[in-house]
Image (cartoon, rainbow, N blue to C red; front, side, top):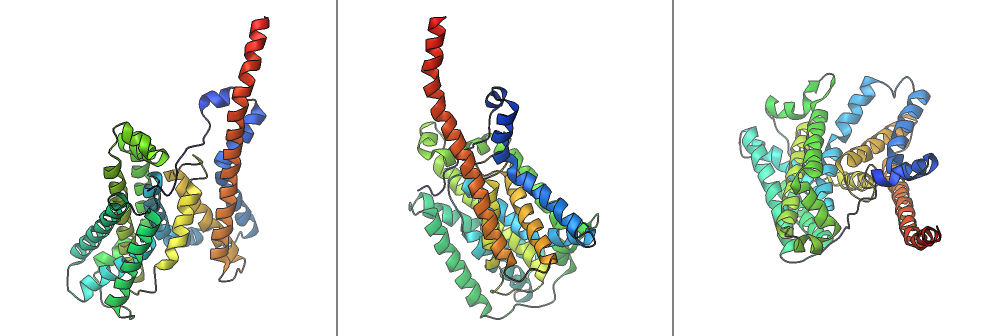
Length: 356
């Protein structure tokens, strides 16, 4: 069952070549509006807060705080590209970061082994989600919500509501704590992951198959695309990335607690949904998702430095999502209007040609 329809609305070169300069601006504004808004916010906060915002310390803080959200947003966008949604990412990270620590402190496993076990469990969870969606034919929203709730319950049972603490190896701390050019290494992880996903989704057949499934799964199946296999694969990839995010969260916090993790769900989904409103409006895409995460990070950081209260972050997430969806809706309406106008103009052009 399909939860999300994927249709790209970016203008083609043929469309742009037939437009005037003003029409091109109107057509491209919804496509790159979020990018322009991101640059505007960076400049605005840099001018208004010259002592705190345009600093390496602020950049380091943003990268450190938003890396987990960025990875989860990229994880969420893969099932979205196939027309599904995965809510397990927000619930699963609770269990994954707890297990990454408890496997070392309670069971004495070496940290590489603990990390591999957590990642394997994340992939297995994604596989189970894929089976529920494609074999049992349960809507992905319901299936992943149920799976996620079970994972959260397991985390609560495993911890007993208490923190999981203990001495961990320096190698495990280094996964998140290493600095590269003055910035957390997790920023490098995100850029590398985004680049690989961009290549796969935009330039390899597997990416085109996933987008085709998201746009019309029945048509994709009729064209010989193994829909079931690719959808299950999308959930497996999403689950794997969520587990990696859990490992990095454990390395950052150095303690495990079941009360941490759920707050990442909404920002991650907002980042992925924002990604479908820019660069390629109407279709989730890697760089759009990155822009979505960046604008959330920049906006929240700037407002908090102005003295914003604790409720600023969820408020900004919600408002930004609504604005971005409005921009995407504007692009959709303009394209639909252009599509209706084209057939109406065709007979008039034919009549004029006949008169000549």
